[in-house]
Length: 211
Image 1 (cartoon, rainbow, N blue to C red):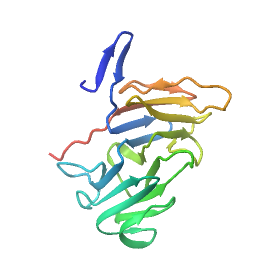
Image 2 (image 1 turned 60 degrees about the vertical axis):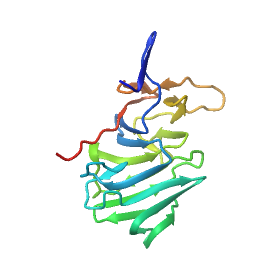
Image 3 (image 1 turned 180 degrees about the vertical axis):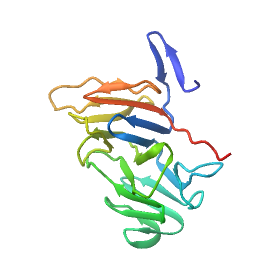
């Protein structure tokens, strides 16, 4: 693979992790991890699907969510509904409901004040490839756990876990209690990782173009 390098005793280390990743969590479901500063939302049935492809009749590039300094904004080609208001440009706040279409609805979340990463949570009627239910707009680090402060949910998680970026690749470790510096594990593409009662694997995000 072009994205990997071979080192003695350490195979498949990600030299530079892709900007779009699929994370499969045992007991937690499927997550789309987006590492760029912005994400396009649009129709999945397209030759060039959006970053967040939706099985809906929305436009190919219906809207964008972008991080600007410490805030997230939504920019749309035409009016959409955010927090019950019709708009094309909106500062997003935790809990805002975003409606692009009848089967394209999300709730914007900022689960933790300690992390700049955000979440787009799909409604029950909104569907994405790989059965993704949450999109993580990843910035620096995100949490894995079973409480409301987690970006990535897992009912098996005991101690919360932290996914973070270092040297162009993603790592995971147990959340430090302030006394012990926990050891991190690299998230290598396609290789399952078990840590803190959680089993997960990270793969490149792939969506087949319509035939």
